[in-house]
Image 1 (spheres, one colour):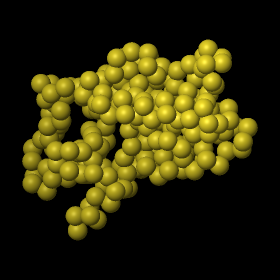
Image 2 (cartoon, one colour; image 1 turned 90 degrees about the vertical axis):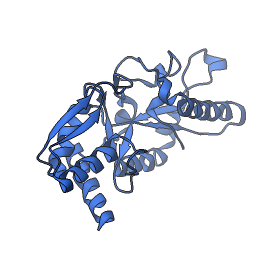
Image 3 (cartoon, one colour; image 1 turned 30 degrees about the horizontal axis):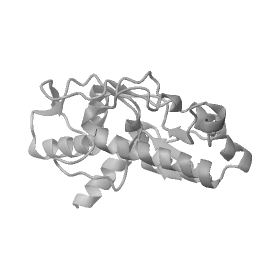
Image 4 (cartoon, one colour; image 1 turned 120 degrees about the vertical axis):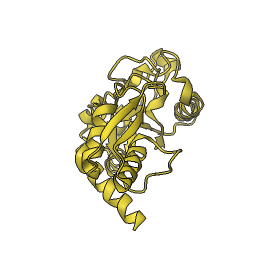
Length: 223
């Protein structure tokens, strides 16, 4: 099982993003090097399957969060960054917290334990169901069907909605300001999870519950 990332899909891909949208448009420039590395991994899996009869499957998770995340003040993803910002603002008694961008982009978030569960689920599928996810040999069928499956929750929130949810989980009473001079990035990133849902798997952790667990772990790490 090869693990990729939702950033493999074009910046302006149709929403929700289906596996077939791979390589149909330009990537988001800010994470293009990382995306290209993951796309190369998908192609490697597909090529090995065709040439050597292997059965590699590439799983593409949406944005992940949860215990053990990176909470670095300048080098972390949006959820751990927001958790740290609101926690420290609460401790200092700040009147407001500034969030980059306009708050309007939409993002999807998957709890890390759900991601692990999805991986175990995929590797435990019956031979018939697993084979159905491996795509086809493009050199024979002429169809672009890489061995690719999305993993996500199937719904998204705006960054503003996320920030307010984190604020409430942390218990911060101040306001939220948005710095529109900073980039928003891709307008929306929502995965189509029809393939894995049809195989029998769905995410089980609501965003608010996952955030509460993540914040509790963050607090414990600071104790």
